[in-house]
Length: 29
Image (cartoon, rainbow, N blue to C red; front, side, top):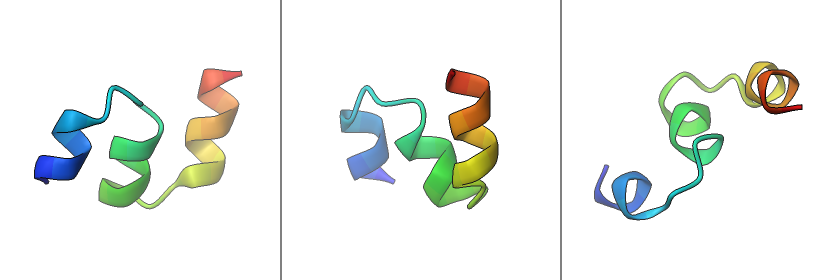
């Protein structure tokens, strides 16, 4: 959890929590 907080990437945090990397990528685009 500490790692995710340090990283300013909103796509990495939810990716590890929800595990929906594809969904996040679509939202970011």
